[in-house]
Length: 305
Image (cartoon, rainbow, N blue to C red):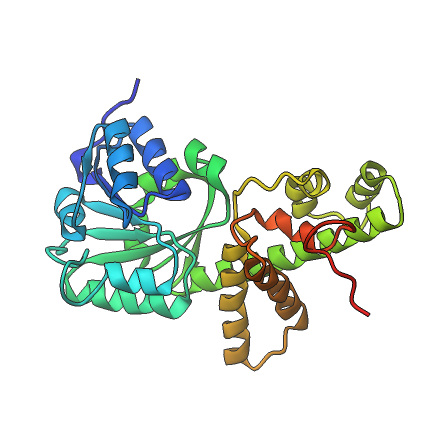
C-alpha cells in the first residue's frame, strides 16, 4: 500500500505519452501525490487522470498551481519552448518557488534557455535525461542523467531516486543533454550496424541464431544486440523507442558536432537510415525496424549498385 510522502513533493506531469504516463504511475504507486497531469491531447490527460484519481489540467498554469515539482516529457525543442512560453498560458505563470524536472531529449541550448526563463520567474529547473525505455519508466528503474544547479539536484533527490536505478549528476544545465545526445548517437549507430550485419547474414543464408550467439561472444557484441537482435530477425517492431525519435536525436548530436567542428560520417549514415524509415512511412516503428531496410526480401530493402 502506498505511503504518502511529505507535501513538499507534490507532483505534476506534463506530457503523458508512453514515458510520461508511466513516470506518473510509478510516482503515484510509491506514494507521491500526483496532483495534476496535462497533455496536448486532452483525452490522454483525462484517461490518465481517471486512472490515478487526479486532475486533468486543461491549462499549463493549472499544473504549476497544483504541484511543487513538475515533470515534463515533451517531444522536441519547439514543444519545450511552448510549454515554457514567455507569455500566454505557460508553466511559468505563478511559478515562484516551483521546480521543473525536464526529461525530454532536446537540444542542450533549449535546456539553457528554459533555465533562464524559469529563473526570471523565480523558479528552478533540472535536466532529467533518460537513457531507458517504457518498462523502466513504469518500474522506477530509469537511467537518469541530471544537469543543473547542484542544490536543485540535491533537493529533488527523493523523487529522482524513486524514478531511477542509475542516477548521475553530470554538471551544469545543458551538459546532461549533451551526454544524452551522445548516448543516443552511439546507440543509433549500433542499431543500424546490427541491422546491416544480420541482414547480410540472412542474405548469406547463415543461421541467424548462431550468428547472434557469435556476435555476443566477440567484438560485435553490444547492448543493442540484446535488446533488438531477435526483434530484427522476427520483425517484431512494437515501439519502445521510435525510428522518428532516433532520427531526431541523431540530429541533435550532429548539430553539436558541427558546432565543435567535427566530421561524424557514421552518425550521418545512421541518421540517414532512420530518416529513410520516416520517408517510407515506417518512422513510428521501433528503431529495430531499421532492419526492414537491410534484410533481403523486406519492403524497404533495396540493394544499391
